[in-house]
Image (cartoon, rainbow, N blue to C red; front, side):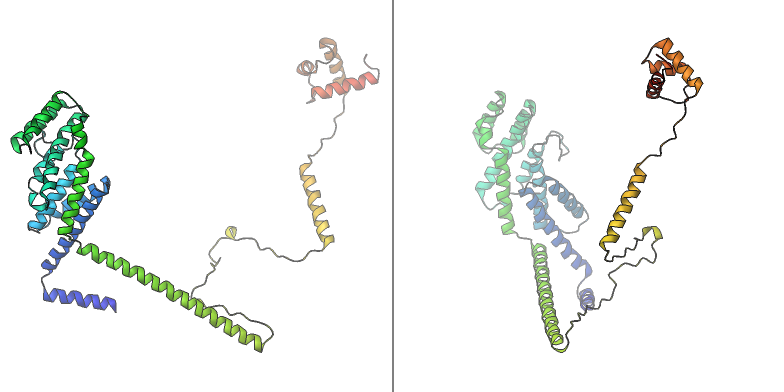
Length: 371
């Protein structure tokens, strides 16, 4: 039913208004949402998310036919934010002129955004911060000549907000005072905080959050629906439990035994072994009560089997031949008593060990065949 309604509504839109007009509205809402996301990523210092959103926003703007002052303002603000965020990366270029560093380019755009600032004091503070930090970043990187170039560029293109600013900054650069209190009072963190204040004021005057509000409303409604579904499930479960209890009590009154019915399911819960090979099937084990005599008999049988497995088969004793005795006597005569390993190396005793030779020599001594 909902699908039919949505199809009918789309057909009504196609008949009443131009599809290109509808597309423009969708693009405008999408661009507004991406602009708000960009501002949020900037305020939350999410560098990677900011760059991803900026790339998507730039791609949409290149193929977009949207025009208007508000649209142009947001694109300029997006460009301004990108330059401020990359302010300390002097190797990043936004201008064709390689001498123009990110904060210098941001100052150029900021001069065109004066009409978007409701507070004159904020506009002046931002201008001073961009100038001071453009010099301070060069000083931090140890690029003194670049700091002088920044001062000259501001003097030729924008001028200084106050007369003594140019002289004071030039003196600081000449003295190479990288951590001068002047840089501390107009720090980069203060610049970021001022940009955040500017964004809050601009978004308050130009919300552009229709798509964001619609999505938020949809999420809330879906959460409410999920809560309602959970409530329905709880009520159904409670009702089912109460019904089961009532039916059980009725059965107890009628019968002495209780029969429990299971809910009928459309699909089986057990997986069949029909297509499994025999090697995957588990062995069937039958459990029954075993008497004490049977248990002792099984235990004794298992222990006997274990003993048989652990016992190694004993080799039959090999007899000493007169020839082997002769070898043993000659070996002891040549090497001496106790040198069994050397004797084994001179004669073939058919796999006998030194211990066996020692035992045989004791037997010969007891029989008084050797002394």
